Image (cartoon, rainbow, N blue to C red; front, side):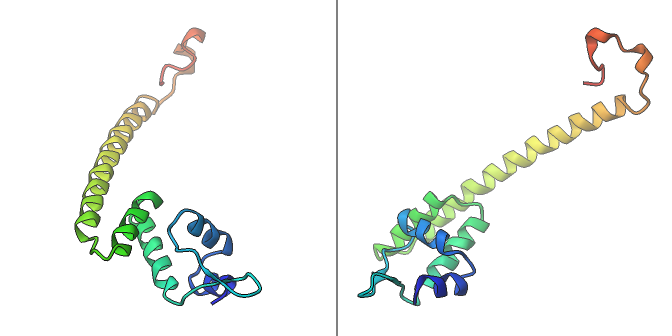
Length: 129
């Protein structure tokens, strides 16, 4: 399968495929006598896995770790579980920070509900921030 056909089948771009290959996410493609990349049809499943990993918020380095484990003939289940656990912790932390930010902005907005520009001194710039 040539690179353009693979890109279309995998819903990605040829540039992305070359990048994945340069980053070790895809094994180097076989080459035709004319030098064109010739991918195995199984590469589509690998690209699909990469996309699913990205959708779960994993970095390409983390995805490469999982692929390396599988390529060595081992099941990466424990490693994937650990990555997902860490991702959940990070998301919970982000949610807590966003909740605190929302609460802070809401409080600031409440104070600015009925602006009184005449009561602001020029050195304050704006008393609502």
